[in-house]
Amino acid sequence: MPPPMGRHRLAAAALCLALTVGGCATVPVSSSAPSPADPWERWNRRVFVFNEAVDEAVLKPVAETYRDVVPKLVRTGVDNVLGNFGDFWSTANHFMQGKGQDGLEMGMRVLTNTVFGLGGLLDPATEIGLTRRSEDFGQTLGKWGLPQGPYFVLPLLGPSTVRDTAGLLVDRQASPATLPSTATDRYAVTALQLLSVRTNLLSAVTLVDQVALDKYSFIRDGYLSRRRDALYDGAPPMEAFDYEADSPPPPVPKPAASAPR
Image (cartoon, rainbow, N blue to C red; front, top):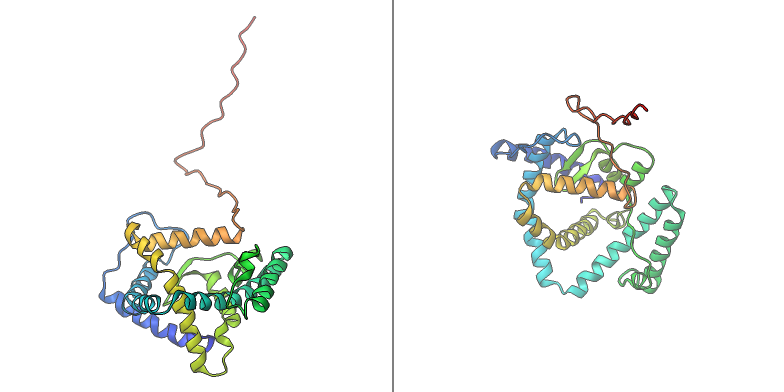
């Protein structure tokens, strides 16, 4: 994810490239009825094709090289440090959502890993039962009542919604990429974040490639389901289903009349 100031210019360039790729390639369209949550499906599929091309040409090979060359101990340390920054922002989001107990526990996790984990390089908090409960500003906006809006595929960044995209702008301000004083260093930290995430997804993406008949729909439905589950802390309410006009609800049977005496 590019840093805040450069991300918009890069996204604009990516949009132009996505249009070019979409104009030259055949964009598959799902044969099933369009999803109400994805009214921009044709556009999203074009961006998805572009993202897949970039991933196959650049991100995946670099991630595989990073996995094969860098020792696992070093990669784990990088993940821990980046995760500790994320835990700090999760703590703030827990409090903004009014979840004081979770906020205190996440704050203790950050403090434990920062002090006893060599600045987050190690993860003793997990060993003592302070598990990670990640929250972001998109979830906070949802807790505040903002609708999620349509599904939206971001160039280079992947699945999102209108609400999550707005939250991402705030999340970026709490990213470790904002700490360096020079643009070069900020880009380097951003590249490391992206590389770490992509490396951890190598096996998952391979599995999706093997099992998904329509990879776009598979990823979209999985993302929306996971975000709904996260918004309600793993206990989303039951969805209400409306009966179709040509399929009225079955009549309620009347009690049988008693036989005359």
